[in-house]
Amino acid sequence: MDHFLYRDGELYAEDVPLAEIAAQVGTPFYVYSHATLTRHFTLFDEALSGMDHLVCYAMKAASNQAILKIMAGLGAGMDVVSGGEYRRAVAAGVPGDKIVFSGVGKTREEMTLALTHGVRQFNLESEPEMEVLNEVALSLGVVAPVTVRVNPDVDAKTHAKIATGKSENKFGIPIARAREVYARIAQLPGLKAVGIDVHIGSQLTDLEPYRLAFTKVAELTDSLRADGHDIIRLDLGGGLGIPYERGNAAPPLPVEYGALVKEVLGDKGVEIEIEPGRLIAGNAGLMVSKVIYVKKGEGRDFLIIDGAMNDLVRPAMYDAHHDIVPVKEATPGVEQQPYDVVGPVCETGDTFAKGRSLAPLVAGDLVAFRSAGAYGAVMASEYNTRPLIPEVLVKGDQFEVIRARPSFEEIINRDTIPEWV
Ligand code: LLP
Image (cartoon, rainbow, N blue to C red; front, top):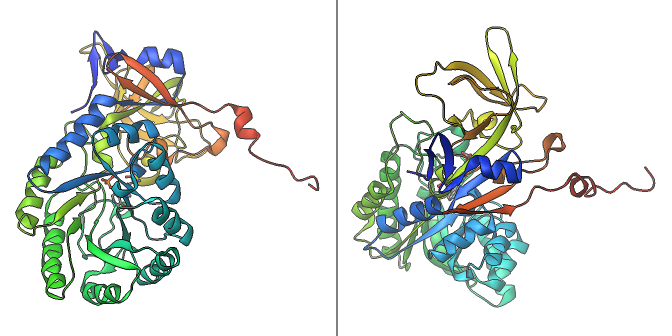
């Protein structure tokens, strides 16, 4: 459920007509709903009620500080994967002891930053990283709390580019080697193991892979405890999918996911951490764009819009589907026609949809891409020297730009031309 609904023939974000934002901010732009973000966080929080838990928002999905501030205000922790994300989380007011540091390639500088300003735990992804973190912690005279991200060799049954829990993926340490690795950690004075971490992929639409992975983590918890380790926390990662296509079967709900966590891990006496990103931000955001031209092609019409692959890369990168809807509601009963929806970038890959059925549109009409709140703005680039598009936050009847569109001067002046050129 989201808060982008038609009212009197116009698409609204909460109580604000999208056309009003477009008139003020220009297109294209991203818009997020405060109420939807809040609702999605709360669904996870409630799904784990009765268990000691912390929902750590995977901020890679949408990292605008206004969004982080909303999450922090609801009591969320953060899952960060770079020094940049760590700094952004701190700038938004997230305390260090609620920040989980994930990622396969943490540098000494990033480790130092987090150890100096505070961190809940590092999720270790390799043995070399473990040795380096021990050195960094010792040099600072502190002990780093860690989990080991185990790779359970489970097929998440999602797009290959976002599956992470198979043995051929670069993530984590093979679960079969975990006992050995925890034994080594126990010998390292700069590290203290506090738990186990697992994340098997993103946009999961089935709970079975989770069941398999969580069951392996439950078994590992017992073995590690038998080996004398103090496992007080299990980080179960993120990955629960969202409905991208209306009319298709919806993925399991957070409450069902929570019930599974309780069923498999409820008796372990551990604190549960989860790292959802997409489910919190995905359907809480739209990308709004304007039709520039309608071009007659051979056997198809092209809808050329002012948004492009650099603004929303998911269709080009993962063949992802985003529902596209007119901002002005189509007249009921009007015959739809197929369009190839494309952007202005000079690549055939700059195609959002092929043969998409839409009510007839003309130049100047606004369209909204649904489910664009996660992995939308954060993955945008300035390819073709197209400015990063603005982000807008709506709450009730108020809205505000939370990241402005840069001017062309700002973009161009970032380059420096050596005198000797
Ligand atoms: N935790 C870890 C360790 C992760 O790697 C990720 C996502 C998450 C949590 C959050 O997963 P979520 O709940 O958002 O599924 N750009 C791709 C998605 C990449 C996901 C990367 N890791 C896309 O647009 O589909």
